[in-house]
Image (tube, rainbow, N blue to C red; front, side, top):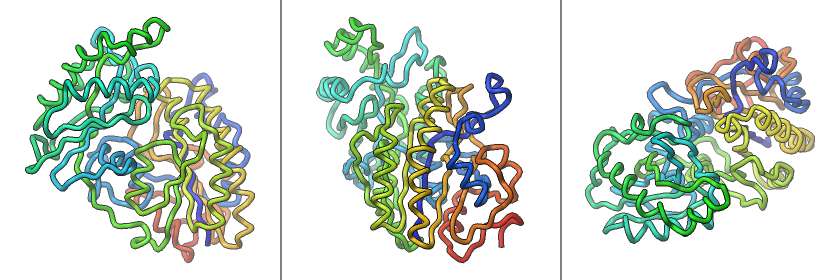
Amino acid sequence: MKYAIVIPDGCADEPQESLGGRTPLQAARTPHLDALARTGCVGRSNNVPSSLTPASDVATLSLFGYDPLECYTGRAPLEAAARGIRLGPQDWAIRCNFVSIEDGLMRDFTAGHISSEEARELIGKLAPVLGREGIEFYSGVGYRNLLIWRSADGGPFHAETRTQPPHDIPDQPIADYLPRGPGADLLVTLMHRSRDVLAEHPVNKARRQRGQRPATQIWLWGLGQAPRLEPFASRYGFKGVILTGVDLVRGVGALLGWEVLDVPGVTDYLDNDYAAQGQAAVEALREADLVCVHVEAPDEASHEGRLDAKIAALEAIDEHIVGPLRKQMPSYGEWRILVSPDHPTPVRTRAHAHGFVPWVIAGSGVASGGFFAYDEVQAAGSCHCFDPGWQLMARFLDRDFLFSAVGES
């Protein structure tokens, strides 16, 4: 049996007045996804427990078949794993975003999509000024960077320390969303001190001259300690391959024991090379039992409030990723494909949300359920509902489990 998983990040959405009451998924031209729905089964799952923040770290763990209430420790340690940064048992990893704050408002959580080269220069300046014994800064991809707090006793933080993802507070007053709980004062101090360091840096001066938003400060969030995850092969009996442009998802794959493929042109934004990602997935499937393709673009389009870009991303995923996989997989005899976002990201709010997401499964052992399209409305009318969502993966991988129109069997 060959398995493929496609994750159009954040594609689940609400009906849009400008689309005549349709969701972006309904409005997008997705012939391959709809073909999977007609020959397979559509359902829904709830990947984020109400007690946890609706973010890709929690939702991805759930989508891959792990109960986040048992294994989730934070977002940053997953990204540290992706980059090979080892954490001691008492160390903390913390996301360190460059952001643009204007008049006390979160104007741009990407600092104008600052480049990796520019971010590297800024991190190089921050490290000697803000760093001290036990604090390490690591530059990453664009605005996404890391701070590692080394400690022999767990440091000032605790599982009750709360931080807010900057992408979930667009144009909101940051004073309402600063860290709170144990150690929060230290995080806030570092964030405030970074303003003076970055204010007149040559990188920011050049960005202002070009009419680009500067990185006005760092935003610290997503802290956590090293998670302990049972390898996917031990739990489910398969070794996987994952293709993504997002460090977070790469980190989850690495911790599960999956091979992480680097594909030129695959990014974490709307400029993703969908065709290259789809072709790499088809080629990887020749050797691997399971291939996972994660695409960030729909989520990024929602964060920017760009309905047109979200629809375009969904159409590109259908044409260049789902289409090639759908054509290739039957040649292996027994096969299954799962397409599902991790969480909803409504264009209206530009932020991640709790709630059910639609999925479609087709292939061997999947009976046609009378669905005619893959979208939120079709999923809402299905008898297949997984809440909690982490239970879906075991059923998807079970070759003896029949997905049918009448529900679980």
